[in-house]
Structure formats: C-alpha cells, structure tokens
Image 1: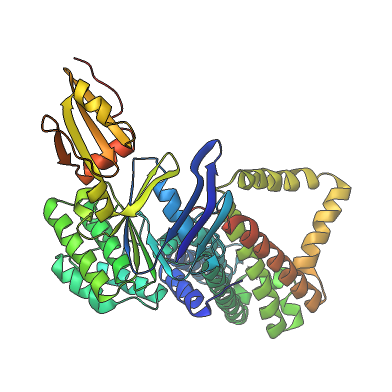
Image 2: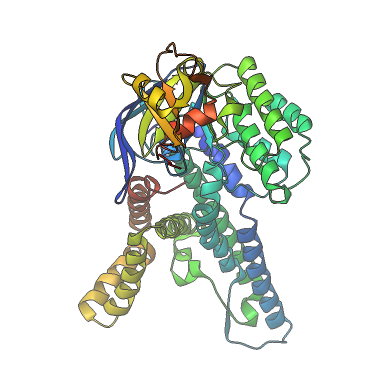
Length: 231
Length: 284
C-alpha cells in the first residue's frame, strides 16, 4: 500500500473543516441534554431518569462517518486526493473523534454524577455498559475502541450505499435483528456478539474484539468498496 | 510517461475503450479529440486511476495504475466536478494542502488576470468561472502529468483566448505532459503539438498537428475527374453535389490537373471527416 501520511493528515484536516453539520447537530443535542438536566435540577421537570448530556457527544461519531464518505469523499478526490490517502485520513479522523467523544462523555459523566445524582437517575452508557466499573482510564479506552468500531461500521455502511450490495446489507441487518431476536438460538448468537464488543467483563477482550472487528470492516471497505467507489 | 497496453474498458455491455495501445511522452501538450461518448473521459480517468481497466495495462511513469494505486504525479480535475463551497482563496489553499507541487504564486497571478474574485464562494461563481477555477488549479499544479477535461466549456471567446495564453505560459514556465480534451481543435492547435483522435473507443489517429496540416487536404472537381485521382489515397470523406465531388484526403500530397481545386483542410474539418461526419454521398 503506497501511503503518503502527510497527505493523509492533510485529508484528515480537510474532513474536520467540512463537518460543520455534524458539529452543529452534536452541539444542539448536547445543549438539549443540558437544558433537560437544568429543568430537572430546577424542579420544572420531574422524571425518574434522564440520558446524560455526555452521551449526546455520540452524535459526532454517528454523523461524521456519514458525511465524510457521502459528501467529502468526492470533493477531496476532485482536488486530486488519492484513495489510499483518503482511507488513512479517515482513520485519523475517526481515532480523534472517538478519543474526543470518549473523553467528553466520561468528563460530563463525572460532573453530572457529582452534581446531579440527587435530582434523579442520570443514565450514561459508560455506566450502562459496565465500563466505568473498571475505572476511568479503562472505561475511556473501552468506550474509545467501541466508538471507533461504531464509526468504521457507519462509514462502511454509508460508502456501500452506492452499490447493490449496500442495499442487500441494509436488508440483511434489518433481517438479522428482526429474525434473530425471536429465535432463542440465534438470539444467543446476537447476545454473544454484543457481549464480546460491549459487555465483556474482561477489558482487554472487549478492546481486542473491537480492534479486530474494526480492522476487518475497514479492510473490507478498502479492498471492495473504496476500490470501486466512483469519483 | 503514459503507456496503454491493449487497454479495454467495459461498462456493463458498453465497450468504452477497445484494445487501446498508446504512448504519451513527457513535456508535450497533447490534444485529445473525440465526439461525445467516444471514450475520451474514460481514457483520462484510466490515466488518473479513477477507474480500473477491464483488461490490459495502464502505466504512468513506469508504474502500474489502478484505483488503489492512483499515480501521485497525475493531476486530473474532472470538468463539472463538485467542489467544496468555500471561498476561492480557501479552495486554492485546500488544493495546495493536497499537492506539494502546487504553485500558489502562479495561481494568485492567474486569479488576478482572470478577475476571479477570491472572496467569492465557489457556488456563487458562474459556470464559466467555476471551470476557469478548476482549470487554474490543475495548471498551478506542477505535477508531471496534468489532464484538462473540456477546460473551455462555458467560456466566452475572450476567456478562451485567455485560457490558451494561460496554458502556453504555464507550459513554458514548467514543461510537463499536458493532455487537453476538447472539441475546439482549431483553437487548441496554437498550443498543442500532438493530436489524438478517439472514436468508438478506438484510437483513430495519433500524430503531430504539423503532420496533419501537411497531409490533410481536399480536392474538388467534377466527379468524373476526381474519382480516378482518388485511387491509392486515404480518403477520409467525400461529398458529391450536382456532379461535383469534394474528397477529403489524409495522405501524401499529389499533383492535380488545373480543372481540380486543391485546398488545405482545416483541423476541425479534418476531425469531422475522420470520425465519419462526411461519409454520406448527397446526390442532387
């Protein structure tokens, strides 16, 4: 693979500059979460539990991997970007976004836990997935690698939409969720999968599962999708 | 510099390029001519690694080209390409980030020359100005191979004249392989040295423009006088009207009797005849 990391980093910076819509949506979501929290703290809203505003930072990890392959890809190629550099540039983007989102979420979780817990139950994914029980640093890395996998999955799925197999994958995903859930044997396979990438009590196994799956998905993207993606 | 070895490209059932073998040398301006759908853009995209060949081998600078091995030394901005809707100056900056050899000084000078407002956003430029900007970005790149796809599309006569000046200036300052795909052959002939004509996915001609000027001519006379002269000559087109025949020839020059008129053939007319625009006989 002929990679020019200087150009990959340049592509990464260009991507970051052209993700305004993702930033705006994420900030709006987080502000909504904060407003909701304020309403509960001031007694204007009474509820047993709310989603921690930090979880809304996940918005960046959802929307960035949609906008980058759907909008930025062609424009970067039209300025003479190369596909291999784009691939690595995107990886830099997703690593940075995953780190920022994981850090922000844990920071907001710590703040809300210490300030708002008396007003009601604040639900945060690091708590719900059991990551925070391993300590702040392992929780950061567990969340970081999970978000990275999530971003790569969304990126690959978005890039696939230009091909027939993208639509087949969409249908297959819906079928897996709807067919696997009611059938006990298949449901246990689904449970095992999520156990490996999210709920595994052994930090290293959960992290390694996410890394292996991320590498597999991104390799598929490079070899079968990016190669054929039209400019 | 650019080498095609029996390259075929098919889009489902359509064959866009049919066993094309081609060699393009460095430090020359090539003019690529062809009708719509002749395979010009496919050929250019193969050089840039935007698409893969269905069969055959494409090499640039001695290295094989594919979509995952896009050559670093090729600069190709497709015409009508979507760009980031940012200010012109920002777009130039972005282009520089992606191209180590980008000549910002040249780009700025050309912006002034063509009165492109660098504070305007890309989408607020007219179609002609957008084309001029993408052409300018390509020419400001000092890559070994620069591909310009329909660079004068949407230009008025003055802009076209300025473009040819820009092309010549750019080439003189930094000689490299420049491939210009266009329909306006007579205009590009002032800047280009070599001509490639492509039709129905096949290379019909690769020659210098001077050679075409020397070998392309027409002869006109009564059908009875003209027909015997044509034997053994490469006739690329023929028109017969009211007993008079005009034959378009691409071959050695011949001596003709005084009742037959011989005239040099313009490049545009030569191209039209080469790609089959004048093959039907019209009897009145």
